[in-house]
Image (cartoon, rainbow, N blue to C red; front, side, top):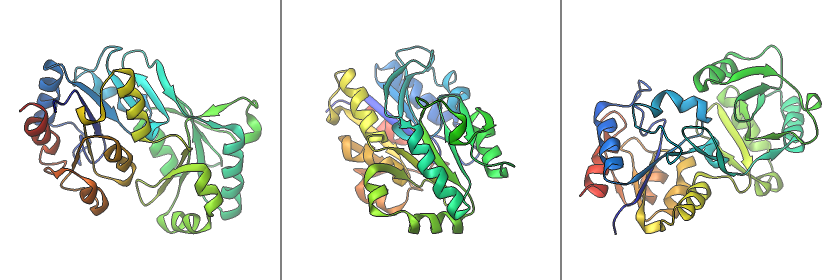
Length: 270
C-alpha cells in the first residue's frame, strides 16, 4: 500500500540527542512532501515548542499539521488553528493539584501558550520546561481561574522517586478516567481520556480521507504506542524502548543515525 501520511514523534525520534533535525532527516522529509506525502509532527510539546523546526522542514502552511500535547490538540502549523481537541476542565486541574499538595509533588497545567505552575517558588525543572517549549510561565492555583477554563494537560514534574511515589498512589479509578503518560522519569502527564497521539492521528487521517494502512508512524517511547496501534506501518527507532520495538513493523536506525530518513527512504519513497 502506498504511504500517504507519515507521522513522526519529535524527541528521541526526529530530533537527535543535540535537539536538532539532521540534514539527512530534513532532506528525507522534504522529499516526502515533494512526493505529495503528508508529514505530521507528533509531540508532547505545545506548538510553540516545535515552531523553530517548522520552516526548515517546509511545514509553513495551513495544510501542514502538528499533533501537540500528546494528542490533546491537532493544529495547523502556520496559524495554529485547532482542528481537533480533547482538553481537561478546571475541575481536573483542581483534582490533581490537591494530590500534588498531599504528596508534595510539583504540578502545573498548560494551555496552548501558557504554563501555570501550582506552587511558588517554581522549580528548576518547571522553568526549564517552559523555556524549552517556548511558552510563558505564571504561578496559578485552580482558585485563580474562571470556572470554564480549559487546559491541554496537567503535568507532574519532580524527582524520579517522587514520580514513582505518585504512580503508586494513583488508583485504578483515576487511571480509568484519564490518559496518563510517562515519557521521562521525572514527568507524569495527565490528559483527557480521549487524548492520545493515536486518536489524534486517526481523526486527522479521517479528515484527509487517508486509511490506516496508508499511514506510517515513527516513535521511541510509550506515548507513541497508540500511533503504532492505529497505523498500518509502525517503525521503531533503534533507541526505542523494548515495548515499542515489540509493537513495530520494523526497527530503523537510532535518532543519531538518521533513522527517520532511513525509514522514509525504505518504506515511503520506494
